[in-house]
Image (cartoon, rainbow, N blue to C red; front, side):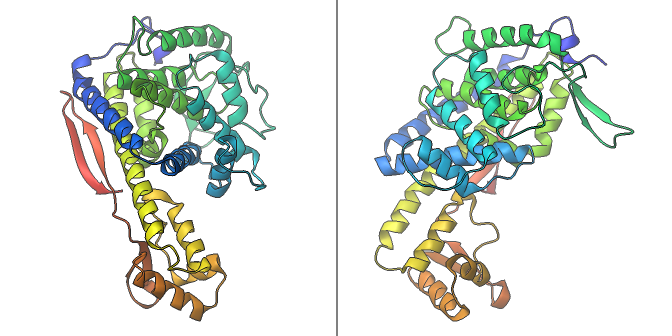
Length: 389
């Protein structure tokens, strides 16, 4: 079997524009709504939205690769880099590195993509690693760069990238393509088309020894946000994580042909879903501010500590809901105090109680966001199925 880069038409990707037309229009409409919604937030709310959005992308793009990071450390690192906070929290290299990447992405969203920037991003995403030979440069190994699964004695090869000696030339071509297809350029492409092709193109080259997924998703995010004209982080990685298995299947299928219509249908659906997740994040920031304002001087320090911990989880909610046991752990309280505090939060309208006895759980009294699951059919119709987000 020939991979896409081995075929005579590489990298002249082709696709049916009409199939993506409706999705592109929907994405542009959504971009306008997002920009308008963000402008109506006050400075504190905009700051909170930015930190939350960056933190979620940093955490979820790492989780896609099986790396679970500490949320508080990631948020703290991002806040320090943006000069929103100065604390002495110790941050591990992996958390610091991915935080630096998302901040750098945001700050340079309108700038051209360069090899030096990719090398810098690579140093960030593999920060603290001692098992890699090529850090901050394209891979140089003689062994084939393969994506494999299964037992070592019978591996399944899902993809094989171009050999190392070809990488620099391939990446020079990629960077020229990316920068010549941005907004305002003669060869400009619509946002979803450009973002989808950029991600697939980069992943097909797989230029680094490791970290290609995280960097490739950052490149796709850059393409999407450049299409906005405003530096608003889109919840792309969070939406990909929600469809983790489908993501890898779609990439594997797309690596076998340079007709990328099917891949663009899948990617465009994920990007549209990501917009809805960003809408939900904005709504959450607004409701959070209203809730905290309403509770001023009505709750004690323990209750506030737990409430802020729950709010830190964002619109996705506190996993499993708050229980008396979790409350006692977070607030460091005895059972009787925990019972009084939780009852007080329910009475104050901060939490909603459900279940009985050991199954009792408490959820934030904030309207739930419904995130639609998006699909795009073969003739380009956009379908959405509502699910609780």
